[in-house]
Image (cartoon, rainbow, N blue to C red; front, side, top):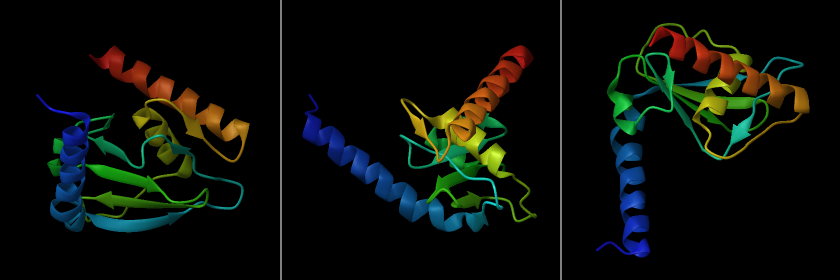
Length: 132
């Protein structure tokens, strides 16, 4: 039977594996929010999106359309991706993806930015459900 300490050790090993195996393979870009826009953060350090779906399992890092969004500050986010074409994503889209990956909470510099991220996340979820 696994103890809590064993589960923590396994989680640490998985994080190390992804850091060593997958993250170096991604093409990383720094995205700066334009004047008047900001990024949100959440209870997840990164958001993983693949094939337009948020909150996918870590195995999706191998998908050619995989994107990892790592907000560092309200003005800077790192984006890792498998594709080498030009990145076209807005702060609002990044916020939607970060909000989609959250489990418990999101936070941002203003109430409006947080509310917009939640609305965008809900709209994206409804579109995906309608397609299914």
